[in-house]
Every structure is written in structure tokens, then in C-alpha cells.
Length: 240
Image (cartoon, rainbow, N blue to C red; front, side):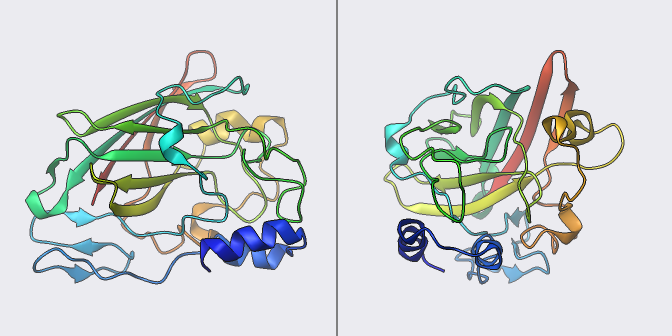
């Protein structure tokens, strides 16, 4: 489903739960432009040197004007357990060497499972259309790294906890739209945060999530360390 139709649905304010889940689902596989690549079962593509990150849906809550939010701290006053996200972008056509000068946008929901810039509709009842929390853009350094200060994302019905990522080259051409998943199980950050008090009853785990369920190689699962007192650190490498 294209973004213009998501926005139309938001304005209409009458989107059913099944429609929302379909909108959050995996995009059709897009062909890789790297030389000598083949499609993998995870939706990514492999070269002789590295594996391209799977392409995922951008909607239904993409940032309206990402270039307006060039910042490292994206919390905007939202409360939650601190999360430092370290995301490294690499070039699949150059053997997964660091890609400097790339533009990296991220966005995710708050502790209650709501997104800024949207709301007041069947897709999200809480109206945050005039707010811009938990959204931001950074440019990768010489090591291909960007670092964001945020909060640990909450969860909402039908989706596993996740972070959206959109990578552009320096001139603004889209290189990759993907998502980051979180490790699950006893002792993980997800288990410690425990849905910010609402627990994990009814939670959709990665294996059942309509985006991450085919990620058999774990290409979209980040490394997450830390604790509730000091906060958490996420590390993720994304090849484009």
C-alpha cells in the first residue's frame, strides 16, 4: 500500500485492525542493484562479500518531513527507559565497508505504543498529530555510524517491538527502508522492560510478526545490552 493511501486512510479516520496489520506488513521484494547478487529467503540479498538488509514497509507512520529533524536526541520529553541506538551503515557494493555521509532517519512508537505526527483515527486513537517525538535524522561519520538518544520502544497490537530506518545517500536518494527487531526471551531488555507495566500478554513475537517472521538469519535483530537503571544500548549494522 502506498503512503498516499495511508494518509487518505488517516484522514478518513476509519481503518480497521486488519487493514492496519496489512499496512504494517512486509513490502514486496525489491531487486538488488548490486552486481552478482541473489535473493535470500529473508528478503535481503547476498553478494560475495556481505548481505543487504531486507527491505520493509515504511508505513503507516513515516515521518512527514524527516529533513526537519536533524538531531541526535529524539526523546522530545517522552518518558521511558533510556535507549542509545548505534546504527552503522555499510555499502554492499564495496564489501560492507563503512558508508560515510549517508542520511539515516529513524522513528518508533512511545512507551504506550503511539506514534507522533499521527492519531485521532481508527489506526491510533491518541492524537499526536502536532508532535514530533521519537523521530530524527543523522549523517553517518567516517565509520558509517550514527547515534541516537531515545527511549526503549513500547509495543502495540499486531507488531513486535521495532524501530523504522530509512537510509538515503548524501543527495537524498533512497537507498534502503528497513526495520530493526529486538532480541526476545528471559533476561533480554524486552523482558526487563515488560511492556512498561502492561506486560507481554497479547504481545506479537518476532516469529509471528508479519515483518520479521521470515528473518531466519536474524538480519534484522539488533544487539541490545544494559539494564533498567542505566538504560540500554542498541547496536545494529545495516548494509545497503
